[in-house]
Image 1 (spheres, helix red, strand yellow):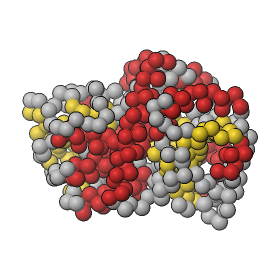
Image 2: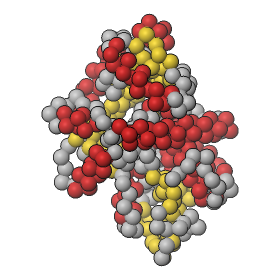
Image 3: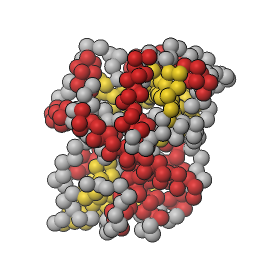
Image 4: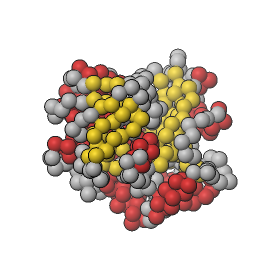
Length: 401
């Protein structure tokens, strides 16, 4: 259930295990929702959880200032407030460190699985393996960032600290007041929408049955089993089921008596043609001061920013993108045709601790692979393999307890 990058990578792993696989997706093609407009970074170096000691203060400031990376909007949805309370309980130093290390473990494993997949399947998705630059505007912020990054460095993440001259050597087009950067040479970028569509075609070639434009109407249960998934035109019965519906997983799960700790957090992105510009980004970068991420996909630049606690609202206006557009134009003044930017907003399926929901709950033949938050593209390959292992009765490489 679900044809985003998580659902399609899971379908692929199950097909490789020899299962017959049917995938259901409500959009006309796969990867049309969260997987379409994300930052495109396979970045274990970006595994830090959002539920940190800094988050409550940032959210509080967002009530009065509109330039905050995390924004909170009051809503009539009571689930926003119950979820937010759970999120706040995770914002201690100890829990943030624990959850970050768990998330990093999944991300590192997932990148290894991705490399195995693309070694076997030559997929074109504008992959860039030059690493990712996490840069800072002043020396104090850089020093604090380096100290913070030691959590991941001690867990096996390769990092290099660069001064301004070294940053310019690596990315000559980057302008602005930059004190230095943390460079993660093993991080990479790529278009997850393009990847997912290419992998879906490979799944179909392997015998997978994909039904797009197919909405799930209900899930039928019989005791502790799922007996069928009913759609708008027929019911599908199977031996095993996987829920990979992203932000919509909790809505469907509630219908069968399961409460998933997932809430949608809206993110914004711009996709900008490079055009004839000669000073475009060549490497993935994150402005750690403004929390704006920039990636290059072939002849396009992807810019992402902002996490807005706003429920299931995906509406957007040009002014929502003004700040992120100003940041990327200042950093890459001759980088792209900024007047031709395509605006998009989508939902990240967030859990309070920023860790995905994996495994079974009350039904013995229903597995969950959902709630991947802001680095779902990074974690998708690993959690797909973990889910296939659980269904096969194998012990996953990453503990799921």
